[in-house]
Image 1 (cartoon, rainbow, N blue to C red):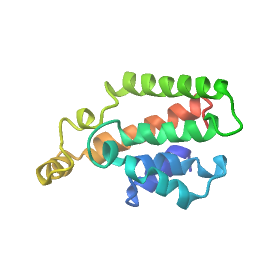
Image 2 (spheres, rainbow, N blue to C red):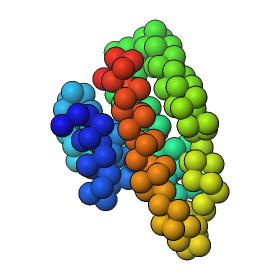
Image 3 (cartoon, rainbow, N blue to C red):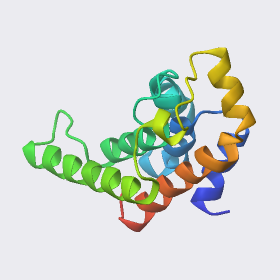
Image 4 (cartoon, rainbow, N blue to C red):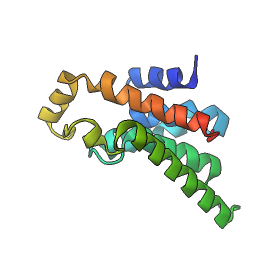
Length: 147
C-alpha cells in the first residue's frame, strides 16, 4: 500500500484530513500514532471546521515540523529549513488546487453550519475535494524528501 493509500484509508475510517496526513508518517518520525492523531485533531476541516488552511496542508506542516523543526537542541538553521519546506508545500499545493484555504476548496461550504455540512455531502466533497487534497499533500511530501 502506498503512503497516499494509507492516508486515504485513515480518512475513510473517520479521521480528519490533518490526522490522515500526519499519521501516515508517524512510524518514520518515531512518534506514536495516538499522539499524532491527538496533535492533528484540531486542524481538520480548516482548523475546527472554520474553513481556514486546508487540514491536509496543516497535517503536512506538522510532518515537516516534526522532521525538520527547531527544538531545544536545534539552531536558527532548522527554522529556516522548516519555513522553506512549508513554503514549498503550500506553493505546490496551491498550484495544484488553486488555493490552500479549505472553504474555497469546498466552494464556500460553511462546515460549522448544518446547511454547509449538507452541501458538503450533496456535492460529494469527501471524494471530489478532500481525498485529492490528502493525496496531493502526501505526494508532495514524498517527492520533496520531506519524510
